[in-house]
Image (cartoon, rainbow, N blue to C red; front, side, top):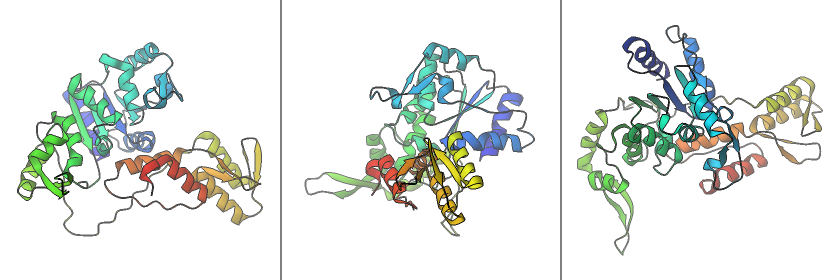
Length: 334
């Protein structure tokens, strides 16, 4: 799907000339690694080198102010806006975490006229900042001429999860613009309490084919009627520089410095355990206390959980792994 979309981007930019600049929004790990690697791998895409847009380039810093958007605030919004509008690259890539801040930074002067939402299940929640940002630039500002949504997932727990993704594409014309409207059009009560309160909804049998027809007007998809239903997906996570150095030092020298303390591995077996700890995001020091090294892998996992359409089972190796997972996932962790 990445190379097909890349081909469409190149065709639009250099054959049809109907778009000027594309923004690709993707999960953090995919944004940082996959898109530039795919463009470099294929000859017909290699002339374009996508530029990764990160918080630092938006002139932002993290803050504990609860009123700040997503825990971030602008250092110099005017400078950010000028930098984004003035860039010359035809393809920019950012994470879903960065996307709402990019939209806020540029305001009415959103500098992209084409948008790719990779793993578009990330906008399935109509209350999320990323959904609101996508809807704002596509539907409200009207500056985006072409929008492509990509997902490798099957139809989620219900067609209702597709509603937000289609609102960005058609303003709610096909599936409805609100949950109430969606339920009136396509669903019926499933579990009803004694007082008449509806606890859950299900698709009306007579509306399955009509909703599939509506989806087919804008989406290309396929169904697995045979074969296994388990798929392996390998996602690489890039360690921050300090964590990468600690990992390399432990692997080469059996010794790493974390927060000013030297942590030693006396033998190869202990080294293997220490490397696993660092990769996961923490390490036990010489006194047996767990020290946080980074949160890169944890953030990637939270993104994967956000994109999931059903229950997720997470295996962990050490008790601190579990503690960090529970803290990051909150009420979603059982």
